[in-house]
Image (cartoon, rainbow, N blue to C red):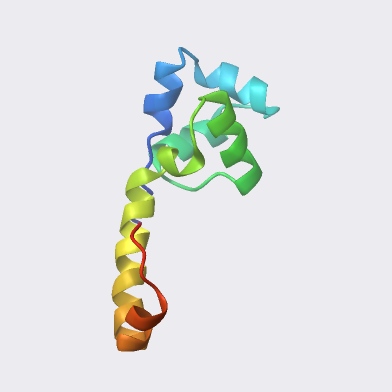
Length: 95
């Protein structure tokens, strides 16, 4: 199984927090979810993502920058394949 790229550990460490502290602040019973998220085993639920971003004083997409970039690249390729020139005429923006 492919790991989910993220910067959760980096931002937790930069905030000077331990996994136990983050778990308590998020209202979790143990650190197991924090550990799985940081290792890229699974993603936090959307509400937890927002809580983490608030706690680490950053944006959600910053915590998952590499994942977002990968998804953007894959989606743009698929868009080009499926929509072709139609996409170019309707959208004119960068990510």
